[in-house]
Image 1 (cartoon, rainbow, N blue to C red):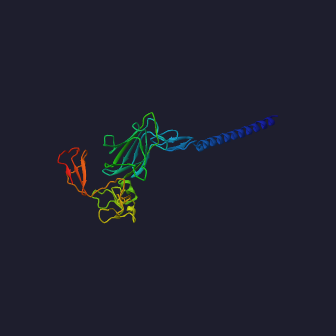
Image 2: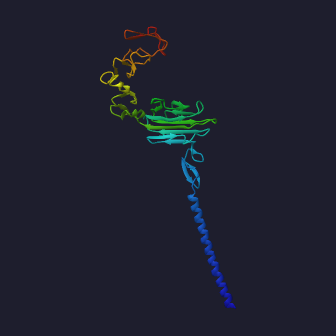
Image 3: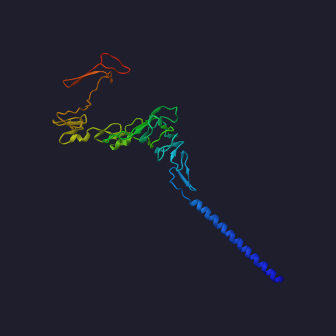
Length: 313
């Protein structure tokens, strides 16, 4: 009986050890599955400015929201070019966001407002030419910036010359819109020369870049055509690039681009090549008379200057 009792005891110990090992294996398997499940758990929504961890968005510095979709903090931008935005959706109520763009001293920094939509007179974007709010305030935006019709360029560019720019956006608690998308670049040409020139540093004493315009374009950003619509050539006129660089119209056509017939009920502006004396200033409330191909401008008022002998031929 003693041997039989020992045999039963030995069998029980082996069974107990087997069960213990089996329990440990099951527990280890459950732990591995739990860790794998927590690592692979995805977020229900995309994380715009953050990373998905354990099923939730962990936002980057300066961003808040369940999808990290709202700016709410301070940002420092040190690249030579980039883009700043309030986020991919309507900005948040009571938002305060600040961007400091660091270039290098005395460099030209351009800000291009590609999209801007805020509650007019309540939600504002302030732009300072420097690295703090004590620098000169050079622009304040509120409301809508939209392109004009007929291809006219109306998207504004703001230029700072200190090499730095501080942008501060504030919204109240009442209403919100789609916000803004602002591109910036350091030591670049205005509007990328509008696609009608190239950015160059040649012949620039200050070393700053400027636009070298193509043959038919002029202006700081090469955005003004010398001869719009090529003057309706060949039936209405031609573009004279040898002299004053303007449209020369045929006898039956008139206007800056030779688009108006002769006679015409429509009026148009002409910029004559007149070089008045240094005393000639812009004025208001004057009288003007055209006689024998000359315009006489008499009298009027001008800020910071007054002279009753204001006669200009």
